[in-house]
Amino acid sequence: MDQEKSTIQPADLRGILNYVPRFLGQTFVVSIDGSIIDHANLPNILLDIAVLRSLQINVVIVHGIGTQLKNLSEQRSIPISNADGSGVTDEATLDLAIRASSRVSHQILEGLTQSGLKCAITNSIRAKPKGIIKGEDFHRSGTVELIDASFLQHLIDKSIIPIIQPIGFDRNGHTLRINSDALAIDVAIALKATKVLFLAETSGLSVDGNLKRQLPVEELQSILQKEEATAIDPLLLEKANQALRGAMADISRIHLLDGRIHDGLISEVFSNEGVGTLIYGNEYARIRKARKDEVAPLYHLMRSAIEKEELAQKDMNSIESGIDTFYVYEVDGNLIGCVAIVEYPEKPDTIEISSLHVHPLYQRQGIGVKLVNFACHAGAESGTKTALALSTQSFEFFKSVCGFAVADTEALPASRLAAYQESGRQSKILSKSLTS
Ligand SMILES: CC(C)(COP(=O)(O)OP(=O)(O)OC[C@H]1O[C@@H](n2cnc3c(N)ncnc32)[C@H](O)[C@@H]1OP(=O)(O)O)[C@@H](O)C(=O)NCCC(=O)NCCS
Image (cartoon, rainbow, N blue to C red):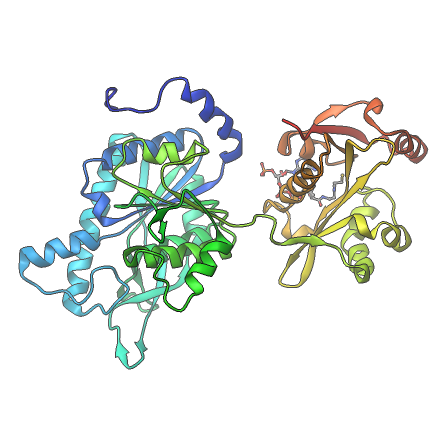
């Protein structure tokens, strides 16, 4: 790396270390516009990707080809029907798109190889023709029909970075051109990625001319819902719409940043301020207070864990009397997780996270952590200093995954200590400070 141009100081590494446990094992989709591929900063971006990999963050690269397609069209004097894959793709344009894609993918392959990273160009995208819209035939333009997520995950698990071209194949193996912004979001949804980073020739998303550093998804939605979304630069409208689609589909963070800035990618990922625009969803959107008529579904959800003594004994009556403490995690109208936040009048600075359960079919998808984080967040918001959890079989989950520490009985409020001793369950007591 060019030392003189680097804006990251050695002291920043300490800051970066704070993010390491948070991002460990997560998947980021980096979407690089065609305009950035030909920019002098591309080698630095690929080096930044090597840094992400060294921190055990999984990376998938999706690239665009708009600039290369326009250049090829000029060089060969072949007119193109559309450059970014959102319009009509005629046969001549498709042919140039395939050539442009091969060249761009090769450039990325070359750069990653120079950083010692393994990577692979895949045929993991099944596409379907856009078809005829309002009487117009889009010919060889397509949209994603299916993503072979297990194939991509297999590569990721082997430390291979998938490089995804804005090209897909239909059921019969015929080639279709796909818009890379939409593709990046589709790939991220299929892989349950936590971040999408769009690298383009823009400093971020401006609303009515004012650059936004952070934009909650609800705000973006209301801007885009207006009949004429004039508040946003028309050149960024497609990205903004795709970002909204991604945030609504549970990708918690979508970034739009200038791919020409040295260290931009690293600065965006590892600092609170960032260098572009962060569009963020409400990560607790699926969690809500339990309703009074949900005693029976809650009991059925928890029953198997109660029988296995993973959860303390409780019946419908005890759930009913504590229903106001329960929160549920809902997917498509079904309760698939729950947690209770119990307060103690004699120790108002402490809450207990209790009755945590995730339906076995939905476990290991981050829902348990989300419920615990939600409870901690709610506790901190109401001024609570400490969260407690008592567990017989999931103490490692609280300790290693949720950042709790083992505590002793002194941490328990008096009434809870009495119940603890009476139960004889010998649960481990875990505690987490909510003030740091
Ligand atoms: C504990 C529980 C809530 C976790 O829910 P989840 O949605 O699967 O958790 P997440 O997906 O957020 O986190 C999964 C991580 O936690 C780890 N984990 C889950 N249960 C664990 C346990 N009992 N011990 C150690 N680690 C555990 C997983 O190995 C996984 O780690 P990985 O990401 O490194 O692979 C769920 O397993 C459950 O409902 N268990 C039965 C009820 C129970 O024990 N509740 C706690 C009562 S105090």
